[in-house]
Image (cartoon, rainbow over all chains, first blue to last red):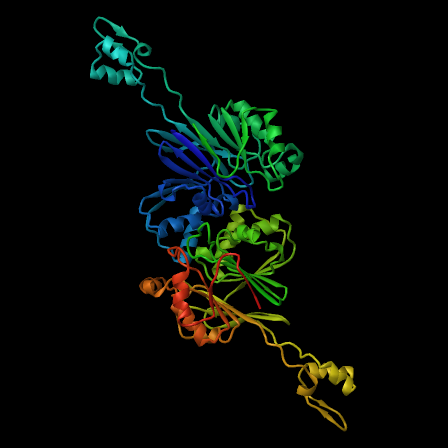
Length: 302
Length: 302
């Protein structure tokens, strides 16, 4: 599978014995990424058999403890276990400072380099790009500066129709041009790109809302993704509490999914008050049918 | 039982699925105390059914992550769950500063007051004292400033022999004096304290070494305790590594126990390299027989 999402922790605020606090592991075509790293994430990674040393990128959405307190422990363990490879952390600027203090107080020396890249407030920004994957950080609305993340597969070269290559005796140069989407202009003939290439493959996309209250632009930020993970800390019954703490209800999460025309909606970050997710699922599915309430350890492929 | 020790985490450095990192819960005659608070401690407290809100005192021995990274999460959960009672944290001075930064960045407001008391470097110091319990912090030898803790039951009033009260028709005032250990001088007679009181009850004591390399004075600091928890990260086979990282071997821990004439020795903080504790137990028991290698969840009473 070119994309795999593993839910490492799906609870909010207080970790329980059945739900860890927020963390997700994304394998996007062998780009190994951790999104958020609440307390206990390194134990959860072991539990769910994620190979920690493969991680190249860690994204931290905001500085509430349930999203980052597991980071120092994880970084330390990677070092004790002998990592040498660069690790890049995208995070609010203050986190770097905080970690440097903790490293200094503990006299920590790392076996590998860590690069910090600070998230910028204001508007969506592409923070990572290679030939396969683009990651965009977008601002959401929470009590402190907070970012969501969107993962988009990058435009791929077209596949050439082998029958056309044979039929039109296409040259190496012509094939190269056709892969880039160009038509082929010959002295005495003209090959339309659509006639010599196979239909475009769909590009994969995923978005993570982090913690946020409902706001209109969210649907633009996550427009058309195959898979959307949106927090649903509460139901409409706790709407007052949701507004006060700047979290979303299941209905609001589903409204975003519907407006954004996403493929599937995953709900998580449930308040510990819910003994099960029936109520949350029912509320969301009245607005948007393709919805799942996640559990720790769940996997989703694209 | 006047004293109960519960092992919350007994591993070192890297938490595994079978051993959490360091934390212990002490119930000393209804004084509820947490010693150290590594990552995941709040989950472990739930697992081992310790009532978190009962905690009045938290002792943090040093600022290596495996001894304190669970603290912010625990403090935050206590607040979310509505605590109102004062919590006192005895810790290295830098920890207060670090926590205040974390609280500020997360916009945390607590439902209860937290008092920080800074541990002083240099020599043993009584940090807590009431009518039942005395806690002494003592400096140990590690890569960064680190303290061990000793718990001593305070001298109790003597119990009066009911037969003597009857036989000598003792007055209320006389009983009060006798309880304090005084002899009773009457106009025509003299009651020796030993003849009117019951034999002294033994006072309970416990000590926690925290992380330390072997040093001579340790045995003085923990002299005569009923129960000693001493770290044994390594065996003599890894003596080089023990020296380099300033940890103890099982043999060294047992040597302290023997010199200090303790009642029982508990070993913990084992390196994750040990698949079981056979080797550590064997090495220690050659020096000191009353020794146990602890597991998470173990309880010890006095």
